[in-house]
Amino acid sequence: MAVEKEGCDFREAPASAGMLNFLFHGLHRGVMLVNLITGREKIALNNVIIIGSGCAGLTSAIYAGRANLKPLVIDGLEPGGQLALTTMVENFPGFPDGILGPELIENMRKQAQRFGAEFKSGAITDVDLSKRPFKITAGNETYETLSLIIASGATARLIGLESERKLIGYGVSTCATCDGYFFRNKDIAVVGGGDSAMEEANFLSRFANKVYLVHRRSEFRASKIMVDRARANEKIQFVTPVVVEDIRDVSKGGVEKMILRNTQTKAVSELPVEGVFVAIGHEPNTKVFRGKLDMDENGYLLTHHGSQTKVPGVFAAGDVQDHHYRQAVTAAGSGCMAAIDAEKFLEAHPGL
Ligand code: NAP
Image (cartoon, rainbow, N blue to C red; front, side):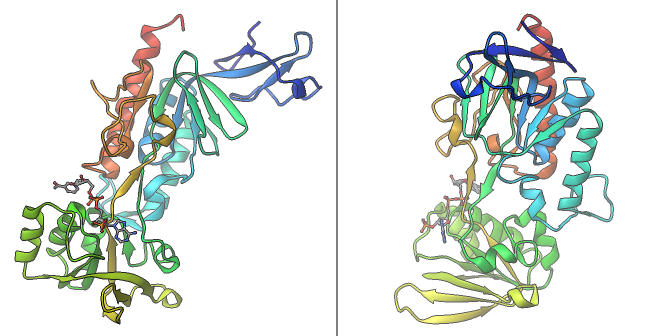
């Protein structure tokens, strides 16, 4: 038997022993129901589940909502994604005076809700993509869905200092393209020794008075051409081999200096800067998809023909499949693509 409510139906699954009671959790998507006669659990079946509520996931939710698919968005560990961690966003089209990252995200969320998107909090702990409907598990909750949009993003690696975390958006940034403009004529630092750090240091030298390239080793993981380019840039000064011990001053709500320790001499020094760009890599949030979807060597999901993954009905959008552009507007664009692809997929498979 299948119960239909607001576009979703409920399929029967074997009940666990503990479910044979009079618990009634309500007719909502993703909520298990118990048929008291058959003693079987029923799990709400969704048209489309969107994993992640950053720019890509929310744009997917707006488009899927407007297509009347009643998407279910599972927030993930970082609701709002990386935009929720930034301050002013000046390069998202349509906001001539800029908009605060959290405000932009909140607006998108409301826009998605207006078109019928539902939100659940929780981090995905398992997925079964071997057959349809796909099963998505977030802790104790299990959801079923006919199509899936993965927009779980990538998390910028952080050094791990408490001061760094507290000053994000207040002088500490993980995105030079987003925030470089705010540091015109200032002395700033870029932390890292890979291609990203070199690229960001070069990019930031357009605005900053001086850019210190702070790295824990005297050798660089970055390609030689990128290192040479940074070395040739008069505004960039290399500071190595040092680890960042602290970023001050949290009590003043902004960046004034870094405390550095030389890894060879152990000498501690201060570096006065007004901004710190942490460029030590990103981690795509794809652990639960390992072995189930194709990924590149760094764990980013591989897509083809728009947002399609190797599993029909599973789509990917945003930074989880893009380590190159990583912009709010490109994430939003790919979120739109994924929703349209999911809609076309459901249309083409009416018997699912
Ligand atoms: P990456 O190559 O993994 O480099 C990360 C850097 O951060 C390394 O130098 C590493 O130091 C340092 N690091 C890591 N954890 C740290 C910590 N806790 N504290 C201090 N330093 C830490 O990452 P990426 O630079 O973002 O590059 C990622 C990929 O994108 C690479 O394949 C890269 O070639 C590519 N990329 C290419 C371009 C381009 O070609 N234009 C631009 C950007 C990125 P150690 O070296 O000591 O481990």
